[in-house]
Amino acid sequence: MSLQAFSKKVFKGISKRISNPINKMLIKRWQKKPIDDSLIVFESEGDMSDNAYALYNYLRNNGYLKKYKAVWLVDDINKYRNCSFGNTEFFKKFPYKTEPKRAKYLGTCKYYIYDHCNMLRDAEKRDGQKIIYLSHGGILKKAKAKALDFWNNDEFYITGESFVKGMQDWTDAKAEQIIDIGFPRLDYFFSPVSSGASEYAGKLRLKDYRCVILWMPTYRQSTNEDLSEDYNSTETGLPFLGSLETVEEFNSWLSGKNALCIMKIHHLQKKLDIFDKKFSNIVFLSDTDLSDNGVQLYEIIGLTDALITDWSSVAFDYMLLDKPILFTMDDISDYTRSRGFVCDPTPLFVGYQCVSRDSFYGALEDVLSGRDAYREARNKLLPSVHTHTDGFASKRIAERLGL
Image (cartoon, rainbow, N blue to C red; front, side):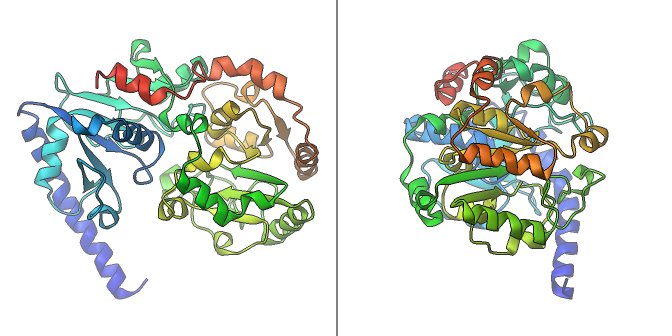
């Protein structure tokens, strides 16, 4: 790191430590003012993405922003400073200076709707203000520590009864606060493919391949050291393919099958050199790639033919597509020891449970031959994972909130 970059980082750090308590004080001050019934504040990790964006997009496309003002908290404020989305303003999620207007909106908004970070966690709980945790997936993994973000939340949304225990474990929510209503991002699976998604699929040449496989591993080594697991520090961080050589072998195998593997990098995954390399039949896909092309991840997920994952919640979302799922299980004992689960997750892993490289390639051979050996079992499990299978989660949420 250059001296200039280091100095800039230190300056921001100092500025943030000074401005944080002031911004919190300003929010508390504004909380003594009347609530603005027409104000909604949104947050997601990955700017304007995931469930929060899908809900916002539904509101925008259905005329709600004629009545309501939307405010987005984002990391890359420069990207959105001059954007025009209609009755929407943007503020830095974690500002390095005092932001009186941001504090006003947080303190007086009727609704704070978020996926990851509760920016009102240090504020007072006030009557009439609704704090809604949309979540970012069905919870099976144990929390790293009891989160403090959720103490003042009003409602927590899930997709099915299988995730009640996980939500309670993470948030200490009461049963009546957990609402089985569905995830807005899953509405994409039931909607026509957008022009943006179609254009991006063209860039990736998805139609040129016999099979498009999506691989979405959860992170082991994270950009946030507090979230990293205490094992798996391979060259790639991938199950079965721990070195560049094994990734190249996988790429050659895919090429021989005329198959493409889209490797979606988890937003918390530590940056590795392998992600910058180019392969003929493997594409490393980041949140930045999606954002730069104006595409939501769940629009792309719906265009794939099979999923490889581990204990990422995407497996349960993918069940709505009724397509094959492969689970990489080689390090489940290590993960159970390091992180753990709120319950035994294996009965929910309905698909090929791969424990070795041979079983992994064997499962892929099966899928590419057109077989879907677990369809019946998957459909039997589906009602406990998804109460709603209609693509109207955003509509239900808007109605529930009385928008």
